[in-house]
Image 1 (cartoon, one colour):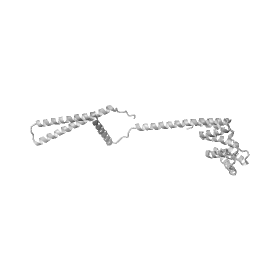
Image 2: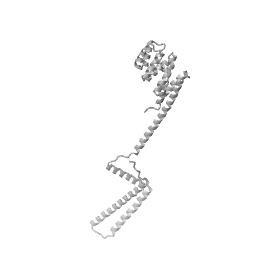
Image 3: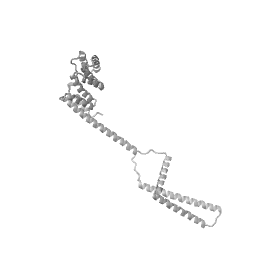
Image 4: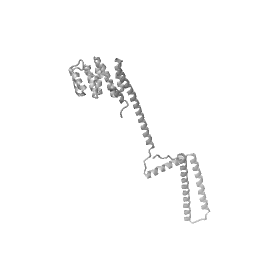
Length: 277
């Protein structure tokens, strides 16, 4: 994706500025030869010539400036910045001036707008009437503003995307469980719901009613059994078994009815949610 501020850099490169020229005055012929190689785009060969000159005179600000330009063309911003700074500390006013200006241009091409602004401001303090520097400073300020806006927008999009993924994860359907495990979970839910229902006032009242009801049925069966004539011992045991079966059936029926009532109340409180798949 092309940065929004690419057009700003293009305008910068189209601005004709004399500060981009190489310095060859008051230097040996070897510097002139290196300048010609530079102008032909043979930056590695030019760099070798400039380095030979720099070894002979490491305090020459003109050679330092030309080395800065060469490193900048080769994309080595750190080395270019190093030699621009050396040229700025030198005694040659023209080398100082051009080094400050070209340092700002290098930072602009690298989309380092804050550093470019510092370089242009430093340059304009010494050259307040330079229109090209003022225009480049304006471009750097606009580029910094657009860069910050794009970073904020990207940060907001990342947060929205993260929130969307979180929401989708929470709404995703649970994976299918084995049939036996599903039955166990359903049974546990029912037992938990029944326990909660029994702890409520309504559940306690229902339990009291059941306790009152069961003894009545048991007494009724006992009265019927007592009203019957005496029978053999085996017949009495059979009647007792039938009486137990009836009690168990009554208990099972009441428990089933309680479960139905509980499910009705539960559904009434929490209506089923429609699935979206």
